[in-house]
Image (cartoon, rainbow, N blue to C red; front, side):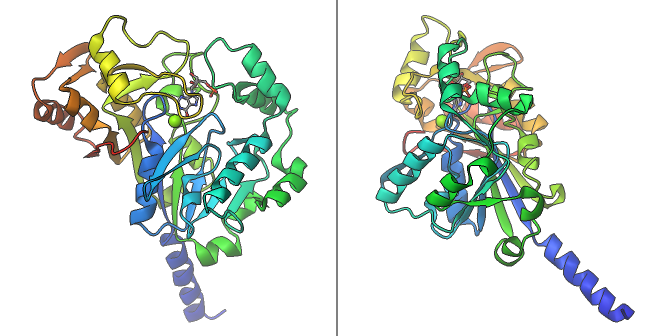
Length: 357
Ligand code: IMP
Ligand code: MG
């Protein structure tokens, strides 16, 4: 090949590679931070062609309001609610086929069509009824009872069933099975995708490795590592958006909410802190800034979105923990300045909550 042509191809190749942009949204606390809302807003404001769920399963619940109508997705990426966006469920996600069928059916009844828009990795593991039964019968940590732990056990024992073993079921649902080793180089990606949004489930404090509260955690990788495990090029990652709330919540059997604190009860009531998957009341505590800083730094976040600030504003309760102490502020402005100073290494976005998360 003559050198001019070679140079031309080299430039084209460089151009193609360098124009892929990847943003990541991940949870920086115990899940329920409002990641779904952030993902939905980002998809609406930017031109992403592909939305990828990189962890979690039916244990997650993302509640989205679109044109005043409520949608809940559990296993599906939030991008499914945007009819111009393609969606992928990647290998670390687990799949409960019958619940996925129901989820798709409900969305179809709400006018959302998934046909030709949904891909799934052939390596995703299938949650079986036995796994759900085991999860529910041996539930010391207060799991969502979705069969997560037992299915991950089977995956690690290498005795699990995977999407590739149940091809018919996915064909019937109109979901295209893909081999992740080939997907990113596929004709589809080359021709349709130049901007990708990776969407995490749960959060840093529930991560199987990073939790401070083992075994009160989930079984998956909820961090940037999980996002990278989709196989996107690390160099293409642009924004890493860590999501948190202005107060912390947790669902499970671990003692989390200090007893007798009226303010925390008010926060739970006013914030409608009930799980979107199980309906359980979420335990509340004040924002732990030390933990949030660790989550943002370990995930190398460029942005931090802090949701539900209006809940504290409306209640006039301005407290957080930092350096092991509970600090109280007289006004929201004081609390805001304090947080801005402590989190000066990221772009901060304070967000109000026009609806339930
Ligand atoms: P599992 O993921 O169902 O095994 O549950 C393990 C722990 O993680 C329990 O405390 C659950 O309440 C919590 N958990 C799992 N998924 C979510 C979520 O999406 N939001 C909040 N908590 C979750
Ligand atoms: Mg949730």
